[in-house]
Length: 425
Image 1 (cartoon, one colour):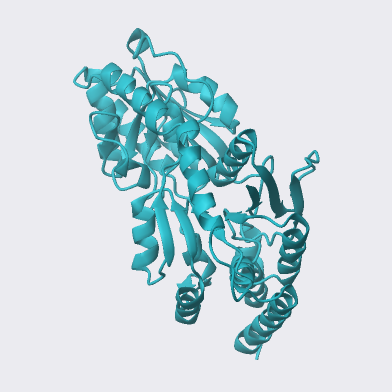
Image 2 (cartoon, rainbow, N blue to C red):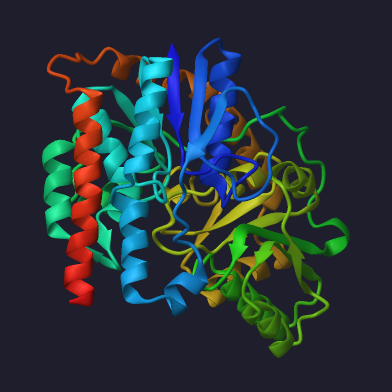
């Protein structure tokens, strides 16, 4: 198949696991003989050119704290419009790539930042078949103005958008549809994955009687809310209960000084460490040296790659029981689950240190199930089938590229006028 992948970012230009997962699938499809092109944004840092990656899209940076704290309201809303709804230049770039490459199917990933609704509308107008890989509530993001879901956007999404979806958890599908957005078409729930060689089974846990706890996030920041503060507070509770033989290592870019202050406030400088950012490969090499991976993430976390990658190395996941990955693993069999509180996580840590949890048995079962059911080599076949089914979609009644571009220009201008009238008039 000829597959055109569209993603807002592409490694080495990344924010988190969404983009890393995209590259892994692209590499796997290419290794299986498919012709794959990637259409993504101009990088935010210098990168080496790669023949199959076209870095032509314009990225609107809606992740900038400066923008949302200090920019004028009209600037914020105009940027959000270009990010979420329509960027006519990006529609033009997509049309050029469709004409040049003539893909059998378009494989969509994270569309925030590149005018996602406009790109979807273009594909719908041309009757180009697509599969959208959802690892977050992206349809909701695209239909928001500020923090609010706009009924008119939802109504038109439901009326016009129909395709094929791969979603990382049923929880994510339920969250999107509970908002009023309908994922019309075919939906398949497909978990996140691990890749690479299968590690050797773990030989030892609690080496020297010490519990080694790890957690990792792309960004350690209260706005992203991965629960790192809860882990620090859990460590404080654990020590107050008389446990001293533990260490907590936290990996990720620290974008908020609050966490270092919290460590100092609880006098945990010798037990909790902010270790900085590591690559996926570097983290994979570190996981065999830890006993548990703590994941007290927010309740609507769609899935998460890191707990899977840790579990593949026998590092037992301790999961917030409401997050998406928790629906795939069984408590006490492949993982431990807990309410998202410092008390609950501290209780699990204490039970492990007290010897009432057989960490070795859970770790070996977790590694076995991850390597069997969650390896990309097993899941890539399902992704191929989804792409092939979509590619067979009839294309009768397709509009023209010229029509699609004219509509994109009109939508962009109309959005700007309406926002100026609403905010500046």
